[in-house]
Amino acid sequence: MINKRDKNQIRKDRHARIRNKVFGTANSPRLAVYRSLNGIYAQIIDDEKGVTLVSCSTIDKELAGKKTFEGKNRKEQAKIVGQTLAKRALKKKIKTVVFDRGGYLYTGRVQALADGAREAGLEF
Image (cartoon, rainbow, N blue to C red; front, side, top):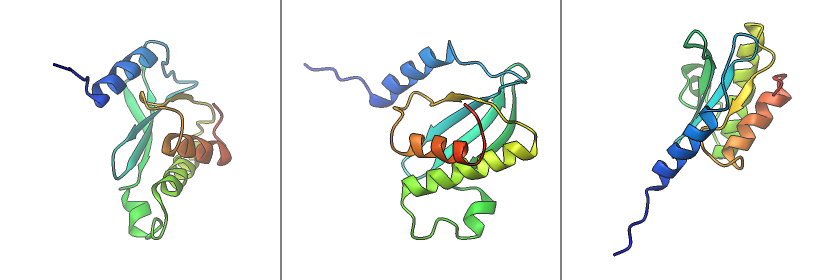
């Protein structure tokens, strides 16, 4: 009998390995990404205090209410989320972050979110 591991469990194990190395401080908080089938979620976290400083997602009332995502594919939506997150972070005077890709491969929507955040002014 073939026992195949759950892909999400493999991702969680990969994420645990990454979290051993990536830690957000007050000077450079952690930009954490979660990707679901329909949406993408990102938040900037200060791990020393255990506090979320800034967050943004595709279900954010501010973005979804303006119909920002109409006619856009998920990759384009992720880029908009990254840009919006970076603008909110810059308002709170957060310029540098460490990127936590959440165990996902750095391609597709995760990469688009990171590129959008970089374009809007975040450094990582």
